[in-house]
Image (tube, rainbow, N blue to C red; front, side):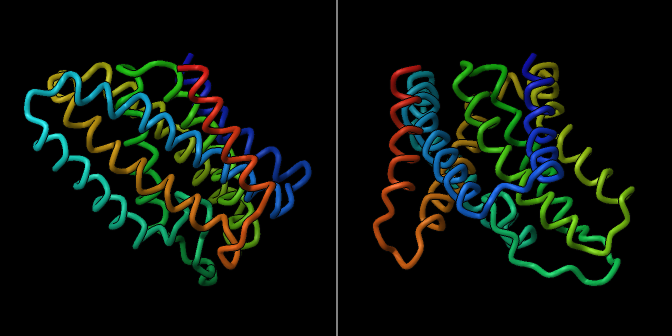
Length: 225
């Protein structure tokens, strides 16, 4: 079921764009909610779990830091697409290879720890992927890329997280080093979720709607763990 839900989360975002593109305000609120939800799941569930099963706390901490650095490197190629801000301009019909690779690697990594976690992580990633798919689809349809290229791009992006779940579950290496891989992904999630929350503010002013979206994301996680 997790495979289908992860795939459909991207499809939902794409369909929303083609039916009636959500306003920038709505997308920002969705991003704020998803960032808060993802951050809450990471802090309230993933962190305690990985440390409770670890014997070398410093080693786990190192992997978390590596995850943060890894995501920073990926974002240098994706230009912020993972957290809903694509800071690039299309260059004619030239396919954005680096954007494609970095997004697919990120989506793949998100799926790796799901089979060893509870449903909160699955839903956090689903909620995260919907606004990202909206932003990505909006970007692609305003480029000069062919429809076939756009569909191929979105299809591979949609299947990467389910592929991560499958690989993380079936390949022995990922099961043997589950704690280290989960710690790595925690670093990725911490980086993305905090960036989402910081970038969803304009001029660092208090925004009641954004604050409410963040609060709902946190409370939803707290009461469903």
